[in-house]
Length: 362
Image (cartoon, rainbow, N blue to C red; front, side, top):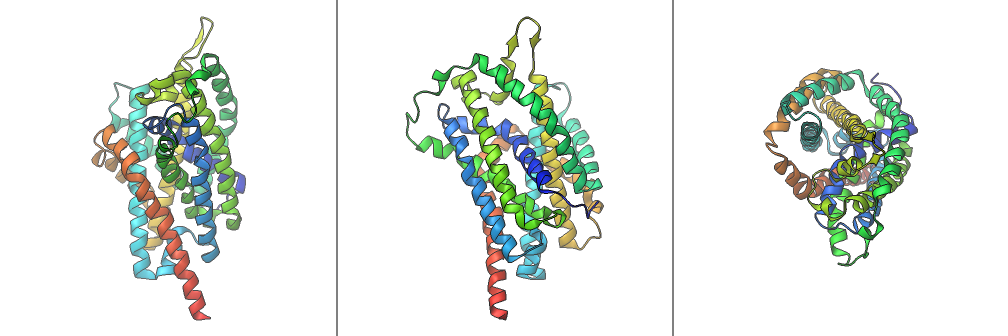
């Protein structure tokens, strides 16, 4: 399955679920620390980060066609310096895996399994995810395709039922405090979650047509911008100013749904959806990490480090983030600059060096 070809539709689906997995949980809370009424404007600005990702991917693939990110870095900088840049990228991937797993452990523990130790939740999750990665990229995209029809049924239903408690006045007045809170709130979505689109550069060798990758990123960006804006509008309209101190404002929005005397507690559907998408995100990033390990250390297959790497991620989720406060500080305070350096500066530097080397040969 290592040679499986991923179609454009499958790639877009995987990118959407990978970003939405933790984005729908974390982004509303992060934005609400700066603005509540104008959070929907911040959602629209997500498109800017997606366009930046598409531009970086286009420049990288033009300079290094049919190369994934790690092999492209080795080709551009040479075997030694290139591997040093690859190690930086692998460390970044490892930390992101630990962060996402820690988010999942905390979310499951708070919402549905408060009596279960979080390390047990993380161990069970990484066991299944490691098996998915071991089976190859095709399993990841098939999983994304499987949950898509279910999401197309459940998500509109939850949106429609939530709107019965929506108060449009919660969104007024628009830009009462100017653009500064909106732009500050857009830092994490645009420079963290939107740049995660560039993880697709690690899947270039599995794509049927790698040159269409920038267009696919733009397609996924457009869909996610609409979805994120709708989520922020409904959440603000239902929860209001309480969004700024609720850890999971979207969950509270779904919990507010009541239809008659019998239809309630639909938050179970929301939790199931979040966990499904988080598993896809973890599998995508873990597969990218295993592929990078294969390129850097010349392994015969990514399967060699699938299970041991999963255990390594599980251990790191508690070693680096002993509390949710440390995790939130990393996401909001450290991740934006870290993502820009890793996902924008390094690929663009590799593309520039490769173009310069080609001109020098001519």
